[in-house]
Image 1 (spheres, rainbow, N blue to C red):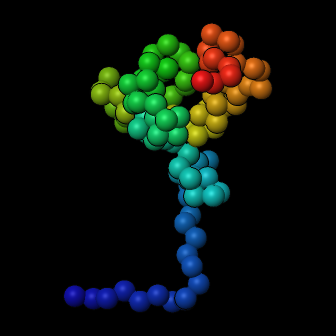
Image 2 (cartoon, rainbow, N blue to C red):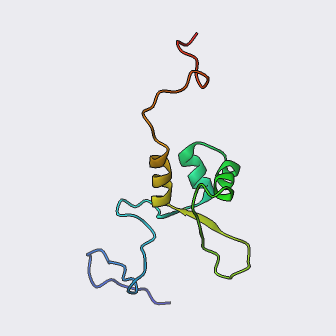
Image 3 (cartoon, one colour):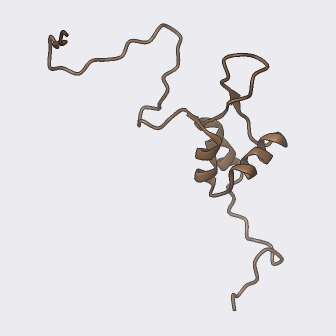
Length: 103
């Protein structure tokens, strides 16, 4: 059995083929999120995330390698951030949504 030795103690840089996209952002967060990851970020169930996708409210990417196979859905982090930003508001909550004052 042979052992590999390094020529240098400096960290290696991964070389990607031209035009490919890194799998993580510059701060080491994944670019593509599983539906479970999205559910955790939104603090909802995975089935709620699936409903958002089914109703066309949340874009997704199918990363399945074979067309016609079981879909493997991922949500790009940028899409999730846009989804959250589009629903962020400073408007007051309607009286029917939350009684005020509480009690």
